[in-house]
Length: 263
Image (tube, rainbow, N blue to C red; front, side):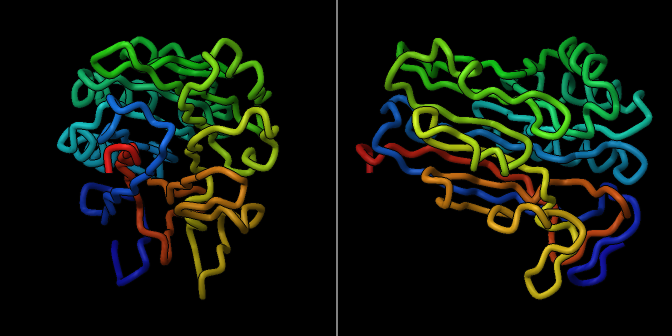
């Protein structure tokens, strides 16, 4: 149910969804990637508080926007484990023709990370755990997508994840928790970092995050340059603890990359 800035009860097909369009400009982005778009599905938490009808609506919005890449930025499902099968089926049906990558969040570990990787992997999702992939866009030019393990339940290793990335390659770093931004060594700084985990605070009063993000005061939501590189934190889509979101509308960012040389 929606009352002004308050959403309470299980999220469903009628829950407000904010499709945002953040833009990142860089003089390091290869010209062939000017206008490249990637959708960020963070903190879906498909389960008791988030119904399949809401997850379907989110993935339908992804499909309608036709991004070049879909990133599942952790905390995909909550207990019980069978929700992973529902998500995998919807991904295959609605986004099967969109290259899809995922990283793990703390709730994915609670659910069973190994099982989740197997289930969504069968649906064509490439799960990155301290790994990278070179993404090409119709030519020889490439950018790197680097996926880190979860900071709470895993063992994130940016150095191992970026090992083998050609020097000078434009790099996007995906990490579930934005606090990892403060642990990136100067030699491993990406051109863009994408994260979630905070739910935009989930419950915010006077701009203060009360339910989530207390440890992430500087990185609750939106774009920040505080780490020394651009970091975009999605407000995410689901809810944990209680089925309530207050002054934190569910967000589906469609990030557009722009080459300054093309401007």
